[in-house]
Amino acid sequence: MTVMRAVAYFSVFVSVILSLGTAQNDDCGPSTFTNKEGTISSPGYPQPYKRDTDCYYNITVWGASSISVHWNSAVDLEKEACNATLGGDFLYITLSNGTQMEELCGANRTQEDFTVEGDSLFFRFVTDRSGAAGKGFSFQYTANYSNGGDLNVFSVSKMFIWLLMVAFLNACINNA
Ligand SMILES: *[C@@H]1O[C@H](CO)[C@@H](O)[C@H](O)[C@H]1NC(C)=O
Ligand SMILES: *[C@@H]1O[C@H](CO)[C@@H](O)[C@H](O)[C@H]1NC(C)=O
Ligand SMILES: *[C@@H]1O[C@H](CO)[C@@H](O)[C@H](O)[C@H]1NC(C)=O
Ligand SMILES: *[C@@H]1O[C@H](CO)[C@@H](O)[C@H](O)[C@H]1NC(C)=O
Ligand SMILES: *[C@@H]1O[C@H](CO)[C@@H](O)[C@H](O)[C@H]1NC(C)=O
Image 1 (cartoon, rainbow, N blue to C red):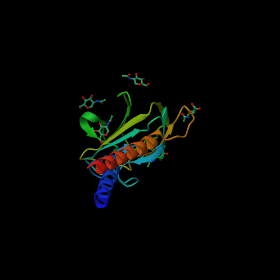
Image 2: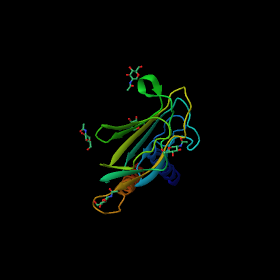
Image 3: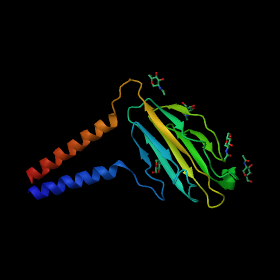
Image 4: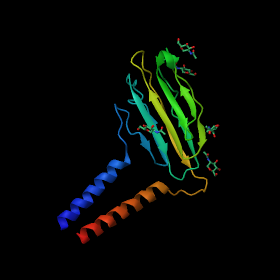
């Protein structure tokens, strides 16, 4: 019985760990960002990124009222092509309501820091097969809470769900 319970706890633990990050292809790194702040860079930054990649970086911070982005350096993508029809490398920035805010391309492009309303912001980095890769991009994001609180609602709710699952499994095993 004790062994069974240990196995049950362990499998819950593993499934919680796995659910924390969604894997994606290539060397894109994690695609899901839920912490209050973080750094997101193109694969291999500041070394040139790989050709033919498609990376997603979804920032969703529960309870946040706005998200600020601070660029660590100029955005440095393939210099030749800046026309999606002709190919090229692009960094797309999309607001939580689905509106595309930016479609960045070109070499050594200095970007303004910015703040958007809402608790989420989406980035997609697409590179084609040809041309010279640049350094890529790197930025820091910070979530802001209008209530002034520093409470990370997401980690509290994650902990709550975890406790519920453990209690549920415990009840199942005891009733078996
Ligand atoms: C978030 O990333 C996944 C890939 O990991 C992508 O399929 C999905 O469309 C993204 N969500 C948004 C809203 O951009
Ligand atoms: C992009 O390239 C296509 C195909 O050559 C051309 O029709 C289109 O006008 C170009 N768009 C821009 C914004 O230059
Ligand atoms: C999405 O939000 C932005 C900024 O608040 C706004 O300018 C845009 O019109 C919105 N788009 C839609 C489809 O609601
Ligand atoms: C990048 O741009 C800045 C300012 O726009 C310029 O001073 C610098 O020389 C450029 N660097 C390269 C490597 O092109
Ligand atoms: C964060 O929210 C506070 C309170 O609403 C506001 O004063 C501050 O300017 C915000 N900061 C950013 C970076 O949006």
